[in-house]
Length: 191
Image 1 (cartoon, rainbow, N blue to C red):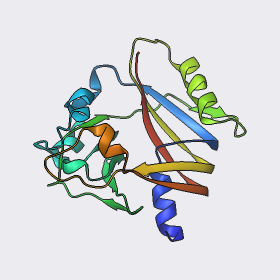
Image 2 (cartoon, helix red, strand yellow; image 1 turned 90 degrees about the vertical axis):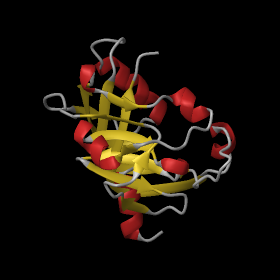
Image 3 (cartoon, rainbow, N blue to C red; image 1 turned 90 degrees about the horizontal axis):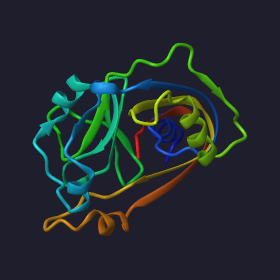
């Protein structure tokens, strides 16, 4: 990966291990839009009919995957990005389709919050829990910062007959990245 690709991957990163961040949380409420379900994805339902253009009309921040489980989907500032198993990140076309995605029109809480850069991802998760006014609501999370270390992963495209998700995930590619500025996108969901 070159520096530009690493920067893009970080901008679209999925995991935080060490960070200096400014975190913004927004209640998703009724605005959270989810296409399909995790149980369907776990059983190998990897083809959907929802276009990425339609998904973008439902929200500007989110996560998901692409048909055939071809990489990780990150929706950031209204653009849909595809992080593929070769470590590359590209903007996905509106005509592409998804078997699973969740998006929200993101509106950060006023001012955001500061987070101690010397803590790990588990500490961040606990910290975000303290910011949520209710444990029974979904919250969208966007974290902009300079990340000391982040682990990102992506699954290669699958072929029919599709395996279950656990089997497909066994072939995931993992990338360790360090010292780049970017954005982490996620959701805090009720248990």
